[in-house]
Amino acid sequence: MSKEEYISELRARIAHLPREEREAAMSYYVEYLEDAGDKSMEEIIAELGTPQQVAERIIADYVQSSHGSGEGQVSKGCLVGLVAVLSSPLWFPLLIAAGAVVFALLLTVLVLLIVFGVVGIFLVGLGIWAIFLHAATGLNMIGGGLILLALMMLMVSLFAAMGSGARTLWNILRRRRSV
Image (tube, rainbow, N blue to C red; front, side, top):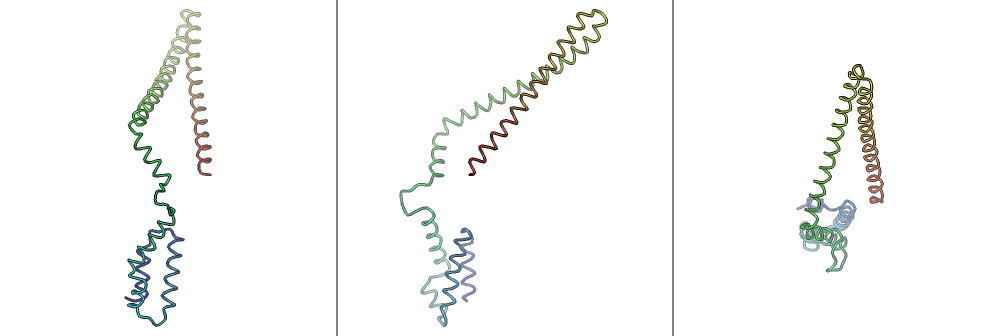
């Protein structure tokens, strides 16, 4: 095995490490091999170990340095995951029920919007026809239809404003979380 093959194999074995860690390790071992002078590769491998052994040491050092030296130390992500899994019999059914309630409310609002719109248009049309038969009845129908159409437009604008406000709130929370 040549020095280039040794370096290439070592680089391939630690390729999954973060760039800074990988470059620091590679620069150390490349410099070591360059300073070895007239030593044979057998002597270098006897001192350092095979590329696999060196890679295992580099990875072990990285894992130990990135997770701290305490053996009983548990990362925050593991703890959150553990709590989420253990409490899932409680929150998962509640999440499904909340989703069903929200879906039912949205469906109800959509049906009301459609009903208000259809009945409002129907009453305005019928009122225009009825105004020629009995003016007071026709005007009442037109007025009722216009009220229903106004309620429909009010509900649409209210829900559009609520959606815009929820989107703005979500963006604010997301920006705070990323800082």
